[in-house]
Image (tube, rainbow, N blue to C red; front, side, top):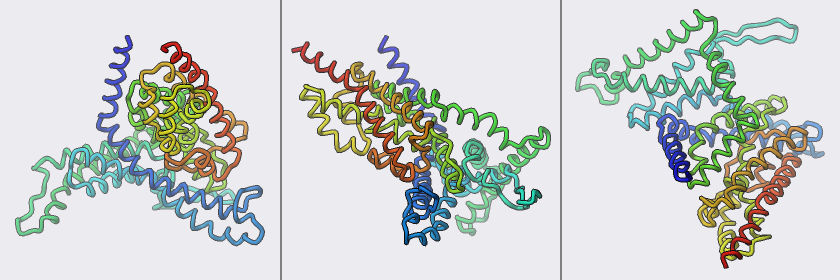
Length: 436
């Protein structure tokens, strides 16, 4: 029975981790992560250095340093130039990654065609309400609803569809404009993609605008209503979030890198949630998405997958097994930076039900506690994302823009996962004594 379950999980995880679109999306978001971190730090520095809000932990609130508030525009510009161009960046990077997957050479043209197709589906005017109640429409403007996270799923889908279509058409010799041999090769190559690019852009524009004329609903709105909002609702709701991260630890239990396998499923949604929070903070609006990428790094992988920081403390306090204590002492330097493969494969946790049970329970307990303590106001919804290797407590402080209550919440979660692991570590002692 165990072999059947293990083989089934291996087959599913292998299929997911090798499926080309999953690989492309995962690689694309890995490449975009530095941009998101840079934008997050723009928001962080704006709040820690320039904010003059009453009670805010900010240098500008210190008497004599009020002048620092004048520099908020610098940090806000960095945040805007990254977070509010998220969909635009995603279109280009996903197209590039899919070209790389196929080993297609003309990646730049594919990126440009994909971006052009995306913009062709966006409304090219912005309506705004003035203070007196009048509504004015600004022509030839692109709303941040299309350039920011709200357009992310359309950007992802369109980048894949357009790039696939463009690459296939580019391989048809009859569609290539042939230039004389005297023409430089770079110019000849550029002309060879004109007809495929023309076909792709016109088809997308015709389909998109035709759909809107017939239905009265734009492609952007239909993707948002039918795909983005339901998926976001599932993964930024507590039950769906807990299920996803239970599955990551279950895969780890069978020796499969659950984080990498499921990353394409959750990463885009959680990153979009924190980008939206950062945008709200930059505009003076409270962040509302509790479950996001910053939350994941702070409360679901403390010490690594399975929140094994609790296991480390439990072994150091309760374990009488020298092998466990020796492995943990060697693994501490890695665990400080949330890397715990030495523990997962060294103790091991893999296929070890005594340690596997708390390994799967600990992240659920931690995330649930953090979620409800944030809801009641002890913690705050996070709006900054740091690399997953940022040590605990420091990541909670940075990701929350210096909110001490969130650091306290993380401390409570560390204690909670320590309590979860402790009975099982004690049980390991009794098993060892029984073997002797």
